[in-house]
Length: 245
Image (cartoon, rainbow, N blue to C red; front, side, top):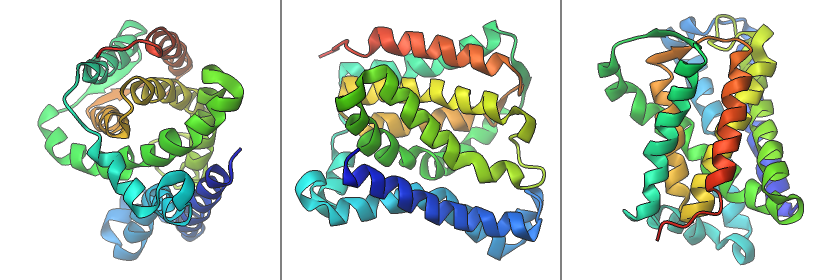
């Protein structure tokens, strides 16, 4: 693993684990975070840890990642090309798999997406700059697509681990393993979008949309999350070498 990948993972975990750890230690419940400015700030900074880390890693690895300009340029690669079709295709497939496996718990008001989309784009979507933009390509050079996607997904799942210890958090501790595998499946889709388009912005958009809609189309926390992940891995593998331009 390259130094830049190690730096990204270590810094991301330090920032996020420290912020989430303080919340866990305080025994503040998830829903009470929103009425406490200090803990809410720590919660947000924790989620921004990977973004902060990717910015810092770009800035200290000018030769490899292009410095701060390299960080900015990643967002300038967004063009309405034919390979953008994978974003809505994978988004629809993700929820079709959930519906087909009867793993939808309930569906709430879609108008709330106006609120969720910008939040999820920033808190979770921007993490793609590091996970899929730095770590995944590095691992793929040595391990191939499948092993790299699984490894990156597991690192991502491990990053989520402290959150399950926050009382009333949406991920139940007893289903963390299933959730981790579910994240690996999503990671396959995100990696394929980046691989086929060359634009990390597509991955940012897809990730932000998946997690936004998950607040409206609420999935059951069950073993079926593993089934969704397997189907996504298969679909992603089929499209990973396709070119649409």
